[in-house]
Image 1 (tube, rainbow, N blue to C red):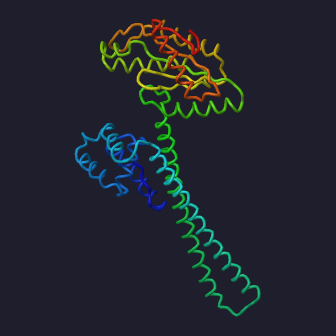
Image 2 (cartoon, helix red, strand yellow):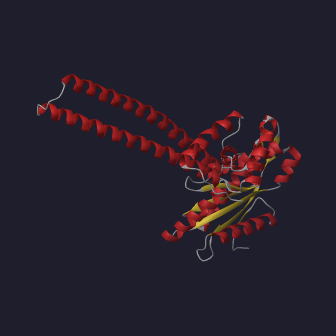
Image 3 (cartoon, rainbow, N blue to C red):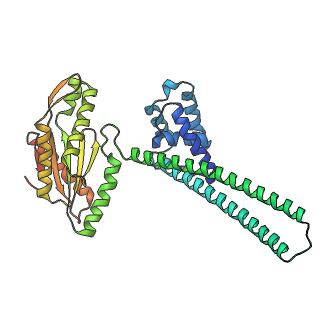
Length: 341
């Protein structure tokens, strides 16, 4: 379900400023999903979510990442764009408020300048005026101007800090929404965005794009034999090996489960096959040991495909997946290229 938001920008900013401390209070990371749940709760326009969350607020043991995620999926939507949009609104409101303060100060300055010009004109022309009264009025206007300047400075200092805090939080949340928390590789969403952009660029610039799809061999056996902690260690290690092997311009992502992808811009099939073989060898030739367990040799199967502008990037993924499946069928610990047998 998708919600429409009817708060003014000022109201949105106030809610946004309260949502972050609330997440911190319960030692929860302000990732997009948790941030969205607390924003929704504080906004008061999702009473069903607030009721469900209220039951958990009384017992901190119930406030886990997983429970908050369940609330998000149940009462908000499947998209973490919600939280990012909320932050955009809040940041926009703070910037707008700052502009308003500056406009107000501009008016104060203009009035003060008009008053000084008028007083100067009266004195220069020798108009009948009481010097003491004029001086008293001038002091009052100057004090008023000083107070307005001080107030503006205070407002600007607060706004500057709030804007910086929101910018930092926005960058962090945006980063978290595109990164797999376990391996620190890009996640599936980031992969989809990157692949679409790179394929479009390849059409515009007429350069090739290849995709590697890697699956860890017998990963279930690792979890069953050594536990999920060891499985997580393997996933993190594989991600590091891939990142250390590919170029800086290549995009490494955890595609899901024990599958990883690598997008290779400006790379033909020969170059992609060479990159895939380097990854396979580096993984295969090492023996992995965690802090407590000797896991031994890990292998992977890799499928390689070349982007065809006439088929779209979905076909690129399908072709790499088929090639990877053939590598499994051929005995695993192999690299296979789409379109070859």
